[in-house]
Image (cartoon, rainbow, N blue to C red; front, side):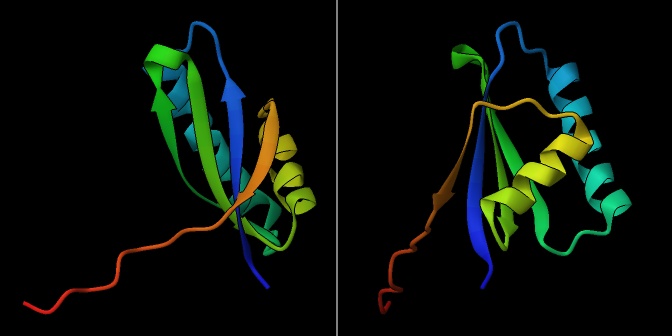
Length: 91
């Protein structure tokens, strides 16, 4: 079963250039490892808090951790999350 994971990085002094470079490294690492156990989805930069959240799907937190290590990404924690969307309302 594929699960959803959020990788949280506190990054004092983060710049948009450094953020973009890390996103590229994660995307490249996913291709280079050919690891189907974890997939980088997207990310969010919150400049005012100097934090970045990276979203992954994967078989386990360990698989996500391996992918992050391959990309050289240092992080504070990995959290499993669930999503929900509102039910459609008739027009």
